[in-house]
Image 1 (cartoon, rainbow, N blue to C red):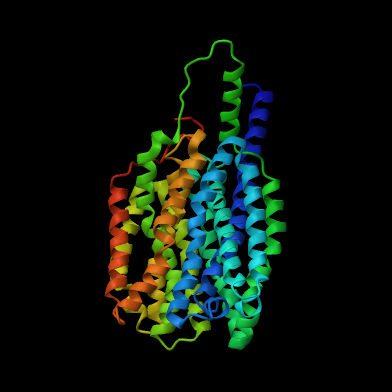
Image 2 (tube, rainbow, N blue to C red; image 1 turned 120 degrees about the horizontal axis):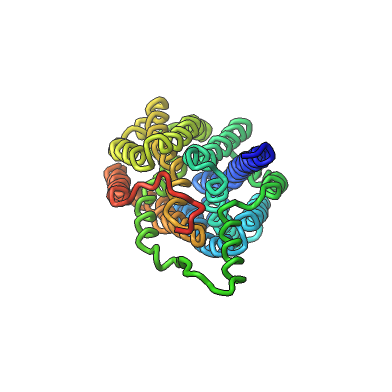
Length: 447
């Protein structure tokens, strides 16, 4: 190779590394900002929303109604995943991710400005549901898009590690959102928190719009998408068209179903640990609200580390071995989780939350690589989005509501809640055992 060729190759390699770094930073920070607002909604839906937006209902019904609005965000995510996924597979990942930022930022800002039921009557819960739908719609496109954007920029041997940085956003958002709520609740009276304190995380969404748009705008389109478009242009201009592989979603229905079932436990139990546990602890223990937020914050700090460890382990051992190991840990902890946190002992609560949440997040660190490697470039965004948001629609969305209903009907027993978690883990474990190993898949090849 001539010196000129070496210089050219080195320059191109440095350019790809630079784009990969910008993609990781932009996607990770951007996703964290979006998840903060989505998470903050879940926290306040378990605390102040029943009183502010459903005051005409009795306390138990108000909690159920508030969790139902929380679930609306998950029902919206498949719609966002499908629409933004189709757009991402056609016009590019970058443009779609800019759009999801704007939509999430605006809807979250409007939630922070929403007057309560006592001011505008039935319009308050109606508009809250609409804005929650917009949040979920935006996150449906963002969650998968950010993962693929990073995966298609990443070197194959570090795909698991780089992908884990994207899903660090979820525990980071829990730490940040619950940290803010912890500080606000500690510094304010309960009345001040209910009047305006809860609004602060949403009003800060203006930062999401400015910072997120800047980060995403300054990163180039992914090499895999550009290669696919170049191939399409070459085929369209050729006099004699060679046989080319054609892929549609109908060819990947079994894969989508299998991935939906596999992701049932992480999708559902993440919110059991971080959202439903708040109302459970308020009802079953004497812990203050700021103490509960503090426990969740500590547990999610541990989860940040396990997210990265999960991604790194999948690069070294393959995707399935660490997924199977963490599934077995979740099976064990799910049997004891509610009994442990019902003790009211802060150390046991943090241990239970950190073990359950940490295992979930280890799998979340592997998810970007594992899902991306299941689909060809032409349907990767749509297929991954359907799998990920489908699991959230079917399993995660109803979970806080179902858990609250089970708790209400069980008369204080934790057996029903334990059975719910154990069943979900078994479903995911079986789906995982039926899934292939994907480490080493070439994402640039339209397989």
